[in-house]
Image (cartoon, rainbow, N blue to C red; front, side, top):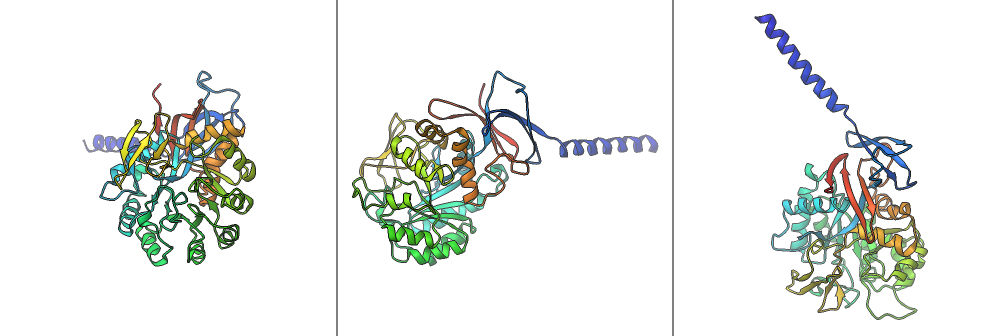
Length: 413
């Protein structure tokens, strides 16, 4: 009897061990047309990382020749699908953060920076703390790489201020910012400021010393001030061409010096509303695919049906049937309702840039800028953040999304 029990016990242990071994060494293969070459490849995944990339003669399923690329990285996400990262009053929850992330996966966004905009000290601290508390939740798969603070240290002038509430706009305050930084768990990786404000240069220097990427935006700075900001550490322009007055001097305005400074990258919103096609083309020609980042500036109204909504201030927000999101009281855009997949397809259409260049601007470049060295390209050793997609008439049509090697979204067949 003891002998029979011993054999049974050993058999069970062996089964458990083999199950563990098979699980540990299990690999996933994903096939697609590589975005760089448009040729078929197989990408092998193990433990959430890319372990092998093999060229194929043909895809296993030639009836569905989807492209494969690294997941998109969006550096400006104010909210999504009814979830806002900015509002006060306790609307932001862990469940909401997960919902927004899962909805972004459906749009091919595998990494993003939740963006908090101009508000009270209390609201910003509260929401940063909540985001920090959720950032490393396992179900998010590391999709939140850090946070973007856009404001409150921006221009108070109408037009340049955009839709940011005037009553909360203020000059840079390092002590206040450190409260935000600590509340965020030191996860603020980038901040947008107006460099012409009193104290901005010292503020930019201090942020740069902390490793925070400084962006200039919602400003009316002169060429001299813009150049000084860059010398003090500013690296990128936030949504170039927006956060700008409708009427500007044709010679003296903040656009030319930002375009002229070769040390300054530019993020641009390519949803078809924020910039005209010719503006996108010119910005792209000047900055090129290495110094351009495609961003979305999406808000909580993205993925919602057309209609009128209310923002935190009680102002009416209009989402048109065409997809434009606007604040009628100021006659300005109110962020975007279009995901980054639209921007990728639109910039290809209006500039003639290649798919490889469009993915560079929407994945590789932000990964480099924010020191996300484990993602942004398809290479061995990188995180297996992958998307399979088709190029539609107006946006990339995502078929599958993998984050850390796990299939987190598959479109219905």
